[in-house]
Length: 187
Length: 184
Image (cartoon, rainbow over all chains, first blue to last red; front, side):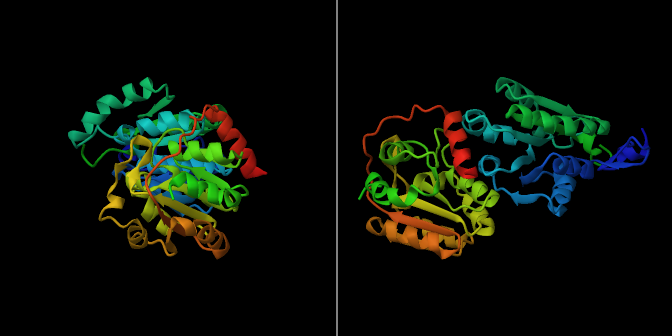
């Protein structure tokens, strides 16, 4: 394993051969795709990307108290002409099933969902596995296009996923596991 | 007054504004009283009218009036701090507080008992919170539109529903014509 795979937020290498910060890459792709309204409910794995989004002048960052509330904000922002996104934990799939079905999908709205995939490989907290085992099944049941980032180089697909989301006007899930974010210390 | 009488009363004010209307009977009543492309009717997802309206108000400059209910706000109480900390001046949340879950059979809510929604909104950081009786809704709504400040307007009224047809319009049609009204 290379050193840069152990460091959170530091990807293997960019096309130019220089180190790539995945938090910056995600925020850059949001901006490049016109995503200017981002709501977040925090997760330890997402702390770096939330901080990066918050720093960007091109993105209005509005923290939500609960993920279904955040999806309501995103729905309104999209109808107001902004491209939205939500950043949340996979436990929120359990919170937002009704909102996804009866608001985002029913009214046919685009919503990129950058999701920390807790309870996967290198997870230190056993309880997180209990929702992890249901996460992909629930997303599949809802016919939500789902991508799983396990290696840091997988972030290169993020730009295409954003384009795909706003092409088809659907909620799209990007599951990002602990390995993608660099793990938890010695886990 | 019951909710439908209030909606009839304020329909001439709502007609020229972007309106996000709460799920269930409130949307059915507004749709029957004065359907407009500038009305976004919620057909599902109880509780999110205030959040949808907030996102809309933050995304564009036109005034946004949310017609919500006490039961729905109680379902999504986290909305009040988000409003209190972020609402722009073009945001007006009207909470028709009839102390009951009207769409499900008028079961009592806690807002009709000891819970004070206006007090909760103030405690959540909302600066302009106005509580009025049903007959004063139109006057308070006009003042909110002129205030140049985000407003939470709690309207105390009687429990009860008018018999109105279910909305059969396709959700994508509701959304599409609403977005055209937003952009127009």
